[in-house]
Image 1 (cartoon, rainbow, N blue to C red):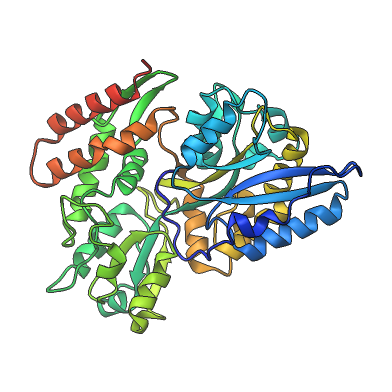
Image 2 (image 1 turned 45 degrees about the horizontal axis):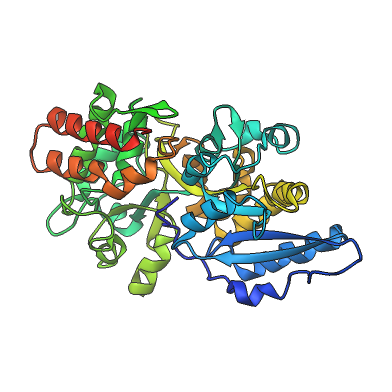
Length: 420
């Protein structure tokens, strides 16, 4: 996905440093070199090297050439590789954002991995928020690798001072507790007015959609009754703090606001807690986590889920071997290792247990089971670039007519998703 919001990751070594790990052309031993493109900061160098060493030891005829890619400009680079006619310079495995699979599949350059997904990777257990974006017209092109999503980070001390003994279990309780915490100079929650990822979860929780359709026939759906209910809940919650109505969570950076010590709650990925503690060491030990509450107790609310899928180009020189590398990275052994190393959510709901000792990641995993992704259109990137959703949110928060604003934003989304 375009917006990488996973905080606290350790930077990977550069592609130049890893280039020496590859197998040099011209060897006559029959060894195959599988080229893998992984994105910067998706995993630590230690994880990459562990996987490479282990995989090569288990597969004596395979050498892995793992090359780290920058997110900036990656779209054009991947598209160019997928459109290659002779396969020259095409990698065998590529990590892509889960919401990018549709646009890459639209190039007709991805290998269909449906059989392997069902037969070898137990796709029935995958997180829908990762699996669904990788499935286009019934074919699975993207294999889920890891996930991350927002939770509520809260100040346990401020909760205790307000007499709140446990995190809220429903949206109704959440509003009540937040109102109780919103007093004097203290904000019950800091929620920026244009945090459209959080709004998306509220809309899905009500049964609404950002857009509806398939292929090139997508229609904006912010003006549905369900979607409007999601926006109304957002407005109620946002009013219980002093977040700006005309800016997103990066203007200013919300963790900097929270670090001042007078905000009770923040909606963010768990890794944000590290940034808060680095800015204000006195916050260490005060931070807790809980899934964004849903409408009913015992079931977390729907959330936007981000992360990465693994794809294999149709023109990959070692495509069959690349599929086996994907199967290893997406399998239980390396999913467990990656999740515990990076505090990510594994690709299967059945593996959430491996995060039991990590409170932030455990809260994230509980919500991830109800995670969703943005509409599976190859043109969704155009919506994010123009982002009429943000404009719509501000119009409603400053007192505009919700239905009128939603209708206008939906029409703009329809236009941006049109397959001309």
